Length: 202
Ligand code: ITT
Image 1 (cartoon, rainbow, N blue to C red):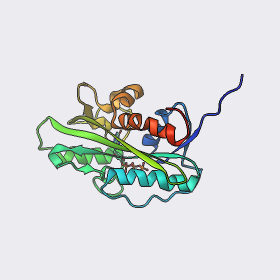
Image 2: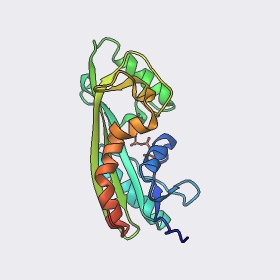
Image 3: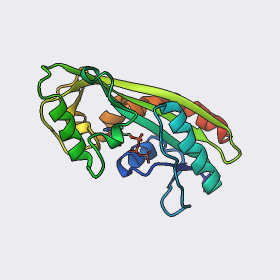
């Protein structure tokens, strides 16, 4: 029995939690991680999710010579005027890990009564080495809890409860998170473009 080779797709992210999630959204592809393929220096990110996502995918596609997907994402908290937003990865100052960052967020919201409404946003990008690219976005509404719950996911998941659920994002199964997350939705919306750019039927 002959097996049709799956097209190769590189996940351009230096965040292992994020890279795992993007990878599992593409079961029909041979997903490769950036680490070990080519040294890639991402430029410093600005405040525009879409531009950041496209730049990550394009820079990685040029460096690896392979089609790449990337995302730029963040957590927008209503009581903080939409912060940290595109700066979510750096919230609370340098040297913090995921836990340090969500603890800084809980501290900033200490005097804000629930519900502390928030949403995760994700702009997904695909790019080819010859410079073609496409973008799509997704969001997930919810609220910031008063303490951390759960061990799954990454980043702010333990302190975020998606709308309509009684558990934090970190207490959901991988399948549950992928079905409702900003990232799951953004890459679902990008699926056809990925197939088209890689020369596959959607
Ligand atoms: P790459 O740029 O290398 O992909 P990064 O972590 O720097 O990694 P971003 O600039 O897009 O990526 O930052 C997104 C941050 O938003 C991420 O570091 C988390 O703090 C937060 N975040 C995004 N998606 C999340 C999710 O699904 N769950 C929890 N936190 C998330």
